[in-house]
Amino acid sequence: MCGIAGVFNVPRFTVENVEDMIGCIRYRGPDEQGAIKVGPAVLGHARLAVVDPENGKQPMSNEDDTVWVVFNGEIYNFIELREELKAKGYKFKSRCDTEVLVHLWREEGDAMLQRLIGMFAFFIWDTKQNKGMLARDRQGIKPCYFMDIDDGFAFGSEIKTILSLPGVEPEIDDVGLNLVHTFNYCPPPRTCYKGIQHVEPGTCWLIDGNGKREVKRYWSWSMDQEKRHVSEEEFATLLDDAIRLQMRFDVKGCLFLSGGVDSSIIGAHLKKQWNEPDMLCFGLDCTVPGYGEFEYAKQAAKAIGVNVTPVTYDESIVTDNIQNFLFHADQPHGDFSFMLIRKLCQAAHDAGVIVAFNGDGPDEILSGFTHNQDFLMKHCGSALPLPDYFKRITYLPTEKRSILLDADFARSLPDPMAAFRGLMDPYAHLSAIDQIASYEAAILGPGNNLIKTDRMGAGLSIEGRSPFLDHRMSELMTLMPMEQRFNGDVSKYFLKKFGLRHFEKDFMFRKKSMPTLPIGEWIKGPLKDWAHDTIAGLDPSRYQVANARTLLENHIAGEANNTRELRTLLTTSVWMAH
Image (cartoon, rainbow, N blue to C red; front, side, top):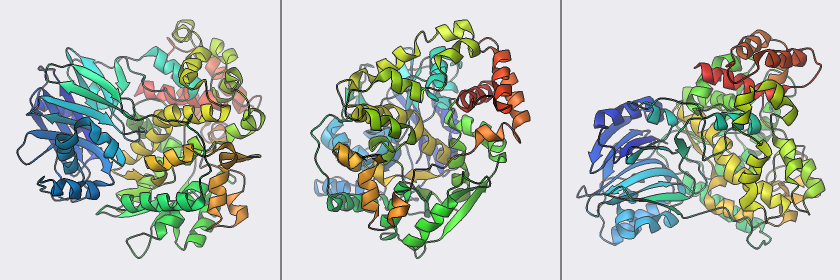
């Protein structure tokens, strides 16, 4: 996990400007920072040393300095690729995965992307061929943003890098901000800033020295392919191989163990290959009964044969962390569990950990989220009724929009349902279960869930590793037919059945719970004053503040549960203030 930033074909920006871009995200790579001008590009990098700490400084070049790269992420199969390239005569000066990229580019061009197993965003420039590439990993695990400027563009791992450039002023995109209230986050490629967008996952930009840019898609989710039953043996073999590749690091590691199905299975398979006598594990423990999962984490740890360290939190997690959460996320998210991930990362950081394994990945593909289960019981065999599903996932129902949003601001997104339909149009031909999986994997994942892991870890120099997000694992899970994904009223059926290899049935097949915090209850009690002050700070040009206060009062009085609406209002108010 590192940070990249740069500009291309914008002569007015200098190496010093790019050094400032990198300075904004120094926490992503506290070990080394550097910037260099290479032809029409100025490239910057902040390095978190995970493999070969002594020899991996970036920007990095090949042996004759004709190919340069800045890279964020990990290429897990770099050893195999390096040996292959060495056999073809390429010379290496380090053991790190970054160096594979400069040689593989020279050997294969953009076809190299098909060879990579990993998570990545990188910019590569070939001075000999006067061309290069900006690329992002298949699923959007590693972030990359861009902004067109003059006849070129700026790019960076975080939005704040681009905003640091001279003459670039932060302007709120009202459509993006409106979408936050609709979906709890801003769906990519749009952001809440005018002119700044995500580089889309699974794409690369092919660029020449004249500034010509071709966007090429090299991978996409394929939920519509023919399904087949996946055997437990095939799944176990591939999972163990994903873990084998992700165990390549030269620093201290740990596991975030929630006691849920996903992280527990990762823990069981990770323990077999762990490279230290003890496997350090952290689990969340809420002081409010019914919200913590630490008892489940302890059960999982006992079955695996490890100890788990509790990371305790109470209502102070909100006031202590919300500004840092939003600073690192760059945009407002109504998902307060960002702060739980930050809390885990803080514990890992304090223990000297650099790499943290997690169970991210299956929920989006295997219908694991609770809000989908009742819905799919009614509709899994039919077409997806979009309006009904939209009502289930929206955070600001139509009747609330007219009383909470200023009229002009509300009109910036004329029809939220139409916006959702636009997101779903590419998947309209699929079954209901595959439409939902496509939305959650292709849009919700890179728009919210993967940002949560990357940004909260990056802010504390922690690299997350997610074996289930090895693209080979994801592709295998998309092959599963309905009965392996959602069987009767059981979501993630295959994974729960697979988990019986390591855990008791009552543990695997219990009702799903997720690490969360009782924000709805806390703003009725210990966070009531904070909530009042925060709602009062809403921008009156975009919100009907008096009505938002009434919404809060009704919630505090127990007259209605307005948690969903208040979550986005609270985070938006803090984000806009800071």
